[in-house]
Image (cartoon, rainbow, N blue to C red; front, side):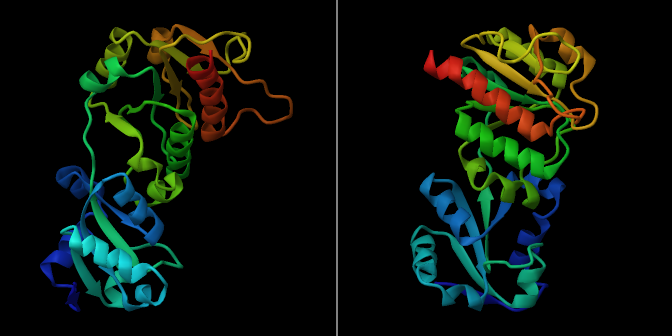
Length: 267
């Protein structure tokens, strides 16, 4: 069912380890997920799991050996590695003892935008925790596509993937090589761009949102770029009742996504 690897010079081990780096993930169109639950989720949504590596301790829990058997029967390459080698593949303190290599699903702006009603556009979101939380919330709020403009953190990094809690497998992530081209395609596809900003008199709960809305969430420190604000048909803000200057990007995104979802799905 599995092959044992005890040397860091093993070619398969070196290949999996290379995917810890963004440049190799981009080149191979693959990423690493860690943990029993998220690997089960990957199988449930028929994600393409290519390789699994685990340690002896993983087999001590009920149901874990059955998962490995299921993966093996599905043609997945399975390797048992030493604890020392496994530690080179993970940055968590209390690992579940299993990682998997998954092929990223590829989508294009041109193919997906015309079919979508609810888009989320991320402008230079940098914090991995924010990115993961936003993707997870977008999944819950019924967002059809997430457009990542240039300058966003890698959604397939380990910290982001942990924050998504498996929602990365449900969301269509659209990567924009050129941000201005992507925004133009969004508008050409019939979306109204809605930007969240502080310098507006319109509160998010004072207006009705159109049936084809693209919500823009900006950088944690500098907000949305000026040129995107100029392209946006609607500017809204969330009221601040206390002393804080602004909301965390992921919190603001969640509030606005659910407000917009109420118009798209409940009206």
